[in-house]
Length: 310
View 1 (cartoon, rainbow, N blue to C red):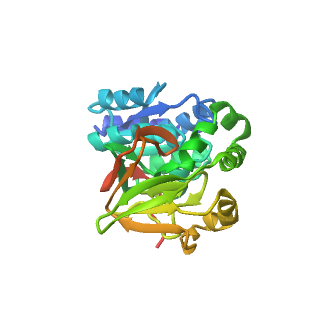
View 2 (view 1 turned 45 degrees about the horizontal axis):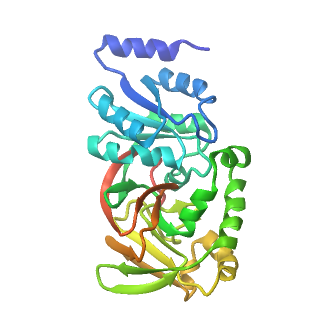
View 3 (view 1 turned 120 degrees about the vertical axis):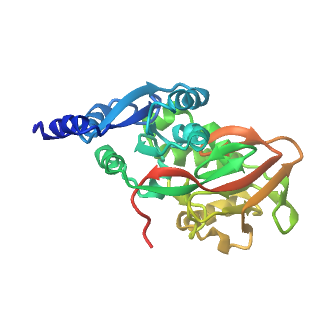
């Protein structure tokens, strides 16, 4: 292998150009783990990045690592799935550090939204190229999310998805868990308050999206974007779980709001209240409970990603 990249890096140091320093957070429990990272890290180093690696065992650990190293690094790279990225979100916003994504998860919905390939070397090249874009961040009771926050079916799905099943079955684990969840599904009552009105509903799920994809590639709605400064809400007010099965193809295309049983709204803030506290799923992680207030932070995060297509 040519030594030219190392020579370029040494030459840059002689000219007084400091290499970019990156904090790499790795979730060792992610679907693809950290085993495939060594050649990727070598690739990043050859492109002039200095890497400090830290394995994270919890949401709190990810946040603490970013805050601890915020003054020492120029960017944060997260190697993991959507849950690992979610764990880093609030600290990234707080510190203003740009985000690099190495998709190691099962669904990789944020990477899909941003057009970041699951091929790790290609994803590393995007980080090394240094081109960034600004994206929005959703907030639920002060907790951050990139993709979707939801309650109802999705929280039951998250509880049915064990880490072991995700590693064994990959994306098929979502299908198996979804079938099990549908068989057990029961509706619940909620109050949805938007900027314009308050409505009481009987629903199977309420979802609020800041990004475009969730659940392994399902669009929140067909025209959802992660940089448009608003949230997209839908509520599944169907007569029974059998109707949800009929809607499945429409969900995959993001056109489920064409059904009259699907309430849809778009705004900068929403509030959801339920009779009893219900868990709220943020990017696949159960983080907070109802009552819950959702809002959007415009252009909150800087991320290494291809330019969005027009």
